[in-house]
Image 1 (cartoon, one colour):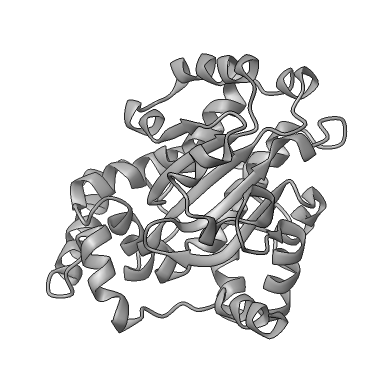
Image 2 (cartoon, rainbow, N blue to C red):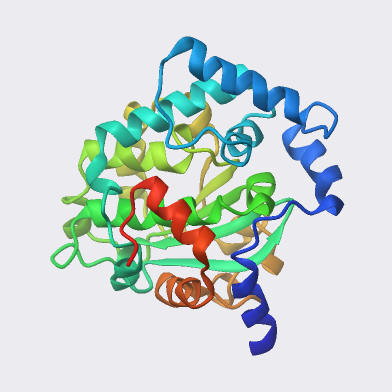
Length: 291
């Protein structure tokens, strides 16, 4: 098991498209190898001709992640890219010169399961009750989530498969809620799909009382897109309801599954262990601090 996990950590640095995944890319992203280059060039031309954004990169690999997140339609990918660039320009404190490795301090607020498959993608877990707002402001949570996604989306596999978010409200109190402002909620919505090149498969909320579910619905009015809210599912304390959407094969034991979760702290430690010059270059281009 440990050897398998170590192989999985090493694979986090994989930046190569797997030819065997072309059928999955066609199914999930409408990506045809015969038209891929043409769509990339169409997107690049839109960037220069319309002048609506100034992306950090315009190479094929970078633009392809936006096409994959929008079913390979250049016009839709361009709108997403504009939102992504606007979000970065309006919120430089969330990424500029942030020490990505230092975000280990968030500990087990964020977890993941290194078992990716087409119906779920990468499962990312946010355990809100583990967050101590007296130690870390809510922006620190947004930084952690953004970092998880920026690193993850470098993998072509995850660009195709996308991801599923699981928000665990166990231990959440009004003390936490008081620190979640409308602005931070809007940031979270942008990061989780509206302004980020992520093929969002669904957002599932578990261990949430009716009181806090009402609070979540309050933030619905801030949602920049109704389509985003349509992918949010509340399960209360009912694991069987969660299992109707996410198979136990993909879930940690805590949620009635069979997998081992990986904390953000461990994941970043392993990323640092296996990172390479290409990774450092990508992170610098995005504005992160790299020692």
